[in-house]
Length: 209
Image (spheres, one colour):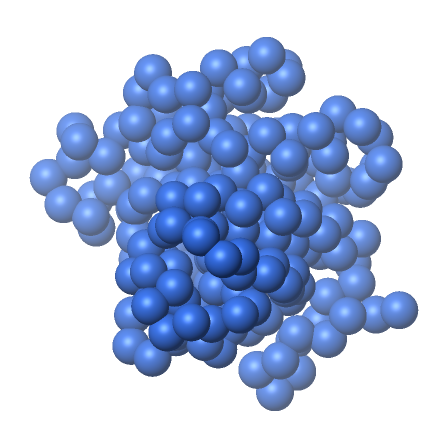
């Protein structure tokens, strides 16, 4: 069983598909051991509690800087014996020591098809807006392993394509990318990891089978 902790900061829209996957029992090797929130009182906490998942709060606002917050977060992840970290609407930046300790063991998802809009540091809101401004016909979501620098992208695990429709607004497109792209890309990436089917070679993720 792979011991998975999910990091959240808000409503938990990306957390819910992971909770559903875990409760369905379709991935016996998935052990969802904790949900850790950087903000107290958010809906994601309620979602986790309703699913019977232990919840911890490592509150960002009580720490003087990002380094001390990430150190506390790393300690909590290690305390609960986390093997895989999943970011599901996590608003805080992760620092080098944490990402180094969990090298190739932190999965995140973004509302873009890598490598589009990945020059410099990725800004998901800007990427969706530019998708519409440039008349891009096809967008989507990418689940990936975070590198040792939290710059918004890394080795690709899974991707989902989403069609841009006439009349789309940034809000409508973001919502559809989340529902049609992020949810399935993220849950498949977690499933593949827990099943031991992911390997990295030459900076690329290889999927067995």
